[in-house]
Image 1 (cartoon, rainbow, N blue to C red):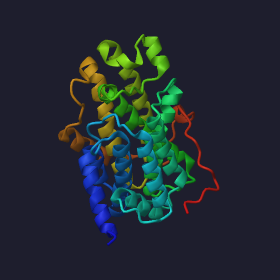
Image 2: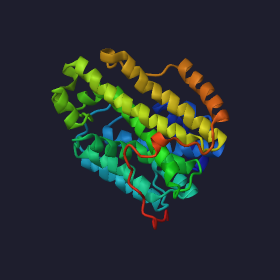
Image 3: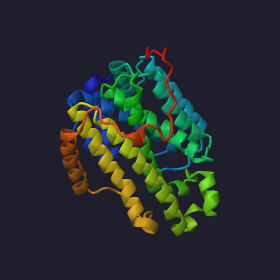
Image 4: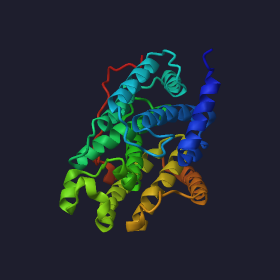
Length: 318
C-alpha cells in the first residue's frame, strides 16, 4: 500500500530533525503548509546527499566505490518523481508531492542533481567562479526551490537571486567548517588558484593550520557577503517566512562566524551552534521581521557577486 501524504511528511520531519537541528528549528517558524513542504524538500535533498556521499543524515562522509551508479539512481528516482510517478522511496516521493503542490520548475531540481554529478566525477574548482558555480548547484538552487515553496513566483528573478544568495552563504559556511572532514574523504573545495597563491597542495590542506585558517577566512567573508544580500530579500517575504529565513540566516551564519573566530582550532571538532544561540537568533529574527522595510534597496547590492543561471522562460513544471 502506498503511504499517505501525512506519513511521508512525518518521515520528512524526522529526516530534518536528524539531519539539521538548525534547519529544523528555523522550519518551525513557517506556517503549517510551508513548513511541511520545506520538510518534504529537505528530505529529498538529504536523501540525495546521503546516497551520493555514503552518509547517514549528513554524518560521517565516506569515499564511495560506485559514485556513477549512485548518481544514476538519483537521476532515475528524481525523474520519476518529477513525472508524478510513485517512487517507493519516501524521500523521492516527498519531491513528487512538493513539486506538484508548488509547480516547482524542473530546471531547478535538475540543477541540484548536477551538483551531485560534479562530486561524482571528482571535480574540484580551479577558480572562485568555479566554486560559486558548485555552491549554486548544491545549495543556491535549493534556496531558489525553497523560495518557490514559500510562494515566490518562479519568474520573480530578483527574489530568487536573494534566495540563491542564502543557499550559497550556507554552502560556503559548510565548506569552511568541513575542510578537515572533506580532506579525510579525499575532497577539497578550495579553488586551485587560492591554493597556489597560498603555496598549499590540494591533497595536503590540513598540514598547515595557519595557512588553512587564512583560506577559511576567505570563505567565511564571502559567506557573510551572501548572507547580507539574502537578508535584503527577506524584507519582501510574508511575516512568518521572513522570520524563518532570518532565523536560518543567523543560525547558519554563526557557523561561518565561529569557524573564523576559532582560527587554527576550527577543525579540532565539528563546529556547531548551541541551542541557546539558536533561540537568541529566533528572537532576533522575530524582531527583525517585524521592523523590516518592504522593498528596501541598497546600491551595494545592485551588481551581483556572481550570477546564477536563469531558467528557460518556456519551461513548464509539468
